[in-house]
Length: 296
Ligand code: CAA
Image 1 (tube, rainbow, N blue to C red):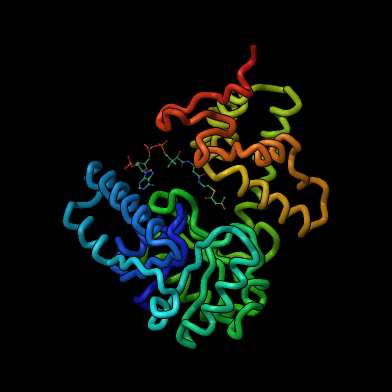
Image 2: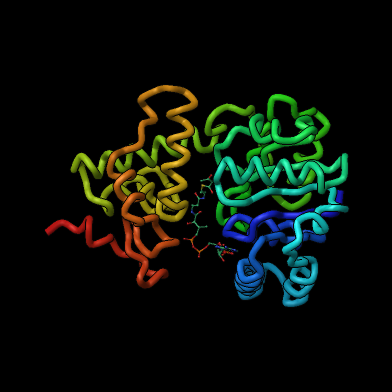
């Protein structure tokens, strides 16, 4: 397995392309917009510069990595000779179903179709194709070049062989794969999102402020980021949509999203990507608690 395609040049797509390319895999990075591809390529360059500055790779490694990435806007031709395609488009079920339906006709018959979805059912996505046995979840964590885990999700029909191929490939790119079954939120988000939701409830109920909650979880539980800072980093819209998948999928009120989260998403306060969430990112290197949550 050598030839890879990554669909979607957003935050996750550029990280996934970066890691495959750095490990010697030729990657077609595909997006409908050329400007999104150019932005992703510049971001990969900047992230590689960090690694060069830290001495973990050389300037030559950086150039080799970049030369392994081809930017493509024509999905049909960019997928026609691939062995693995990882879809990392926006987290929207209709869009993903459409992409998988198209991939089924564009990709070679034995090509594995993976999705980086954070919570949409793999079985449902697989049903949009004629090859559900070749469809699998490959859930990378953000920032992809740094985080070791790949949560591998077996759909209802995914074969042992396809699972093993994806596990081996994940190891070959320096990641640690863990295979799980296809139920709402899989494992990572079934556990992470209720914690984030509980942190938001704790703020909403006035038990403590943003900094207090995050400091307690950082210092008390040795989390690298507090849950509110992490929610901003992931994107509050993404957190809300995953909570809705859990709530709908299990029908259990314990997953009901906190009304404060719903309000913030409605108001467009989505976290890092919009410059404000629980924190304000006017200076992205020094986030400060958003004015909405500063006690007077
Ligand atoms: N590309 C390459 N390297 C990067 C990078 C990137 N995008 N971002 C950070 N780094 C590197 C830095 O260069 C640095 O390298 P060294 O260890 O060699 O010095 C290292 O990562 C640490 O970065 P920083 O020193 O800048 O900052 P930090 O110590 O605060 O770490 C962090 C940043 C890695 C993001 C850390 O805060 C962290 O681990 N946060 C938690 C992240 C997390 O939980 N991610 C999962 C989110 S959930 C998800 O993704 C799935 C979902 O479905 C919602």
